Length: 236
Length: 236
Image (cartoon, rainbow over the protein chains, first blue to last red):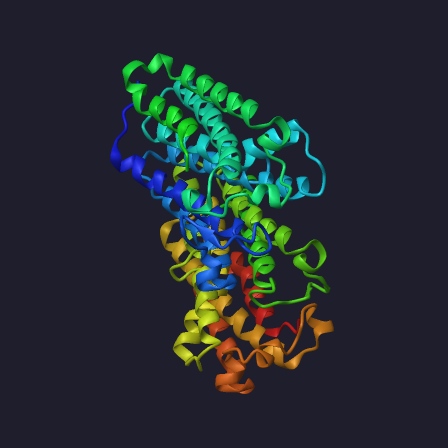
């Protein structure tokens, strides 16, 4: 149904990771989450200063699109890849829009609909794009791209719900980033709104919905199925 | 030699302006130039706070690529546009790289070669890209794209030399941004290294080199010629 040539998939994968890293560097800045620890190490601005951290993020975001434009696929697929990633990273139901909604939510008591919007925009959008660019680069049929889009959306959402849970349950040492920050900053989270037990149920349901999208792929969906299961079971 | 259909040129022009605006918003941040005034108004972070200013810049940079991906041109041209703009905005001889070199130069006494690198990367690259995307969107022949690339590079460089001069000669009211900042921050500039008279000569020579590239276009190059002349004569 779709092949997955490394030549086409690698630049797109790198681009997604550049965007992921840029978003972490900027989110950790003093004006945003003001975090000192990331992946068990000092955050970029702690080590290199705020100016370089801002520019490192800007550089990575730009490099993502430079890399995507060099993906060795036919041009029409290249443009689709770029549009997909830009939308996911952007302001309308994308990462930047989700981050702004998250900032706004700190001032109010966000309801579940707002929290869903934040999680789907801030986190699920990029994970969804990662699944879709793999499918487009590999030449998947439109119906399969759509299944992988839904898969990505649901595991991305589940990932963020679990992230909220781990922020409560785990230590900074286990997470490699500062634990307990959500509550300290009175962030809107699933545990804060639904409690831990119901939050776990939401994550499990989302993963199950994601896995159901893989059904037509049979055995070839094995890795993605394991990924969905892992995201819910992870402890860090 | 090249047509210039509005449908194709407008999104590319918007994308360039989104990147221009993002770069001003981020450069004005406290961690970078720490500027309070831009276009005669409070800078983005003064009005909306640092978090929103960082995210506004990120959002505009992303929107530029989303917009470029929607340019109504054939896909192979679309990918070329995106690669060109990403390179200009990026880290290797692009805007982010130029900004980093500029930061580094504040700590040392930069020589003319370093200053040239900074001006060409930080400023000329985007103006060059603006000229090139217009040519590509309009379907120009490769040789004409190259002429417009050289034209843009030279007027961009001249623009920044004049910017350095105006920072010394003009008032904040005339510029709509804080004047005299370069000297206050001991920035490497053309006037600081060559004096005002020789700096004016450099700007005039660069504009003349740019105008020479337009020669094959005859009367159709009139607007661009006027632009090159204006950039050197401007007082704000």
